[in-house]
Amino acid sequence: MSSAQQRLSQVSSHFGSGSQKGAAALTQKNPDDIVVTCALRTALTKGGKGGFKDTAAADLLTGVFKAVIQKSGIDPKYVEDVAVGSVLPPGGGATEFRAAALVAGFPETTAVKALNRQCSSGLQAVVDVANAIKSGMIEVGIGAGVESMTSQYGPGAVTEFSELLENHPESANCKVPMGVLSENMAKDRGISRASQDAFAASSYQKAVKAQKAGLFNEEIAPLEVKWTDPKTGEEKTITVKADDGIREGMTAESLGKIRPAFAKDGSIHAGNASQISDGAAAVLLMKRSTAERLGQKIIGKYVTASIVGVKPLLMGIGPWAAIPVALEKAGINKDEVDIFEINEAFASQCVWCVNELGLPAEKINPKGGAIAFGHPLGCTGARQVSTLLTELKRTDKKIGVTSMCVGTGMGMAAVWVAE
Image (cartoon, rainbow, N blue to C red; front, side, top):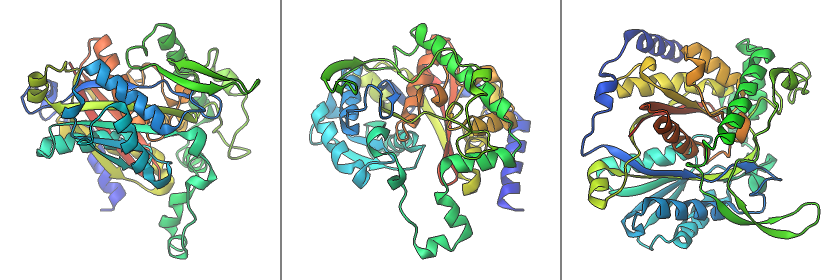
């Protein structure tokens, strides 16, 4: 049996077999649970012209670290390790992220690492910290993500391949640009432009509604930054407290008028793909017993995660491959999940994954997604945790899944329970 057939078998058998342990078991509370006591993000702002266009990634990280310390009330000395996911910074970000932690108030005893698993970097950082706690390596840690696409996104983000890599057909596919990949996938899987534009319009509309109702306020930490007015050149101090890429009045009809970006006869354009953005997010984790000992308020718990590989040219199908594996590990089925936060890298891949998995539209990104407010690459995986847990609490629901496709052909997913 080929790997693709094995994956199909795994998906179909899981989705048809029902729950192994069920939601009731998942929501039980145990001293060794890995819990979240604070999950915050900055606003997400438009790359090159938004509120954070003049703010370094490490400064965004410093701001969200300070906010987590303040909101949680954690004594920084208890935080033993910080993992930060980021895709674009020179040197992987290792030096400036350590510096950011020190500026934020963590003592020299708090260790810091940077990591890069493309679009799932923020989630991988959170999972790495959860696993370190579970293994007994540390007691308290922070998983975070950050990206300044204003300063670091562009052609130089992908290095030239050696002759060895170029001459291997599957290897060479790893550097095909994301837009081209998604255009090819849309054609290969028969995803119509109309369905993509309808999905994108819904994302904008949900985000507009959520922003007007103040539904993002609890998860966003306002940041005061320096900002230079591009018209006058005047430097100002502004407080950034709202996503600035959310646009009103977007409809499937208006999106249908936008010119394709990657092929004359293509279906993908600026309106149905994720926005280039700047932002940061951080998640504070520890065991339930530790949280109770330190007087930390528990807002949710981490259950499990999955990471899978798919063909590089079909990287968009990643959530379809990863979500069933995470559900299997958690012992639940798709019907027991209340909210799915699936990253909207492109409407094409999100539409296909949702349809193939048979997920109800009302459970997908209820406050909109990356099409509406942005996808700062390394930040998104950590950002989704704050968005998910906040919305589960608000709607008095319990179980959620975060997931995303990953550049070079991967998918990642994680299961969470709100408290």
